[in-house]
Length: 419
Ligand code: HAM
Image 1 (tube, helix red, strand yellow):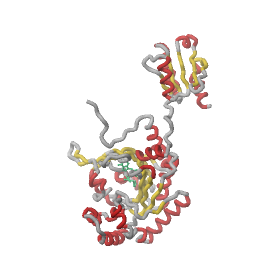
Image 2: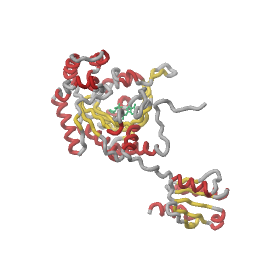
Image 3: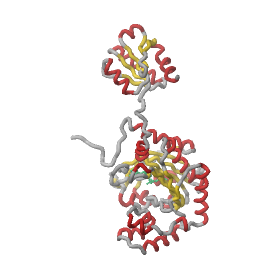
């Protein structure tokens, strides 16, 4: 019997897994540079947290959650996203009672029972950034700038930023009512008519051409904003302009999660086909109260690591396999293998990435391993070398080989590698 990974769960094997780490590192550096600290939150939470936080009317909660009863009979859910869990953790540990905003980042898998296809997975990897306890539009722009610089650091040049606002508790109800009035007058199927009553904004997001044509003249949120939402939105855009981050005003942009208010945005990659959303975020000023906390605004985003890897590949940026190590040991014989083992560990302790041939491989097999490792130098140690108290250091690019006293190998290689 043989096993396969569960359906819709991508795995990242070497050498491709190096891109996975590079994506994480690019965003971690961008978030760290902006003063965000790492937070580790649970992979599963009380089901009710997501039902209340993300919202019962969303596809994520109503159709896609991995929910099960644990052995104690509690209903738990594998996190479909990070924001609700981060907010729960901030409230539980009182982080919001200290200096504000609380700036956090986290990363890892999230779980959504979606129909798997290229770029859409059931175990998806996110990199997530949250700033809790601020209403300053500069922080909205800051989160966008962090995501933007992450994409830039990876060399991506085709990312598009789609920007919108959803208004607030003051102005959204009137807009929602106006939109519902408009939508009720259209010729729509029953499921869509039902959606008008629950989540009318989602109808604007319908991809079917016959629906698209009908909603073309639907009222837009940007024409119904209250003065403070308009000022907020204008400020975010002015700051993005100052930073030179290009965006597209997208008044029909709808996010798939219920907690959003005011600023919302998505990052899109044109080479990815149907699953082109490589990141998304926005304000969630009501989330804290929705999950039983005090009024506490917040803003953040998550990028999809899986899709960014596809974008890196689509733009031809996936470098050739990175070198695993700098030095590769080739011991010939039992005694040499023993000495080489110590030498390789001394190199590692000195900060030089090193590996060696195992299983008593002969010269030919061991040199093949050296080539595959991507090492710059091979250290060859035979019986005659041991007798002479030295080893052969071979430059694997040029083929030049020199004898170096065993006692000087570590310093010599360290020097050569930093030249
Ligand atoms: P989201 O738009 O649901 O937002 O997900 C963020 C990103 O995760 C998407 O843009 C996409 O790249 C990736 N993603 C989502 N679902 C899948 C999937 N099934 N397969 C592959 N990638 C996927 C959130 O999750 C919010 N929590 C973001 C946020 C943080 N808002 C405020 N703070």
